[in-house]
Length: 438
Image 1: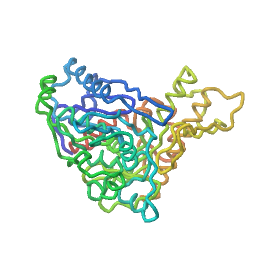
Image 2: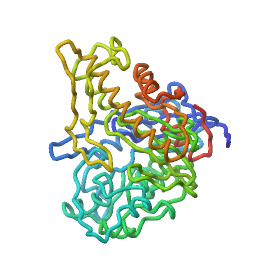
Image 3: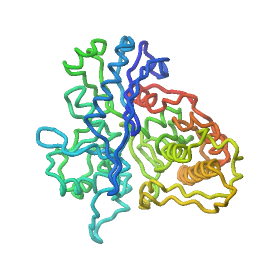
């Protein structure tokens, strides 16, 4: 494990918040009190849109660094690392100005593609780890080309890096979440580009894991303590969260619960097991991949129900785990690929007049737990053994009831990562070669 003195600045580009926090450079643990947060409120539309205001997002993130500066926390910083939401896209004009908001992973707008009988989607999936699904740039770029006249495309983390350093750059990890990366080569996939109808030069250049940039003169003057500090490429939050929980080999799976949920295994990209149709695979860095399954309902479901039902407590404390007769199908936000269930498909079965608001919350959390368990068992089969499990993420940290529910559902030994900032911790570990423990 590489060990250094000093501190790291981590930027977390989430869906519900943008954050900046300071970590110890020895073990990537957060420095107490050195965290600033800007709340993000995505805009949802009846047409399936789910977008973020790019200017408001970036200015909010920069304000987080100002807050840390005012608190005296931007001193002795040795590196800047980023953990980011996957799958976002922005259409840009010839001057690099945004023509669209940030189109997030939750946005369901795209075009349908009919590639004919000669197209082998099984081979495409094996090569890119993705499908021709609305989540990915292969369907989003043709839609944006039909709606606007873009000169290029980039994701939110690519534009944040460009704003800070003046260089547009993406990592192999972030690029893998676009659905246009050849996993084996670490370069844009020619067939994916042809399907999207673009050349590689209109997408962000892919830089190696060891690449670093430096803050532009403008921001060097704004935050003098960060002059000359290397800015590392962003890591996709799913990959970063696995590493941050300590689940970074093929013996263990990480289950993370944030706005959405996922179960994933990190493993070498070389000699990786053949990818089943219903799992995705992205890259962690130049040498490692992450295979898993994601679920659109998790912390967003919890927040929605506790607000809608005006629950006094955030946990269904009066309901024993497994005791509710109500069955919840947690598809309020639709499904992730390869399934195509649309948003607005959530269902409750078995309601009676003696059920309470806590019953509905318990049923939903149990339904989400069962969905995650389905993915976990597919990963068991892929890697040929029962995986150990580490739980992590803000939802895990916030709810003891949910932790117990997941553990009971998995029916196997389950550890809990005590550190809620698993994404930032993992991004630091990927950039600097650290090995965090659960």
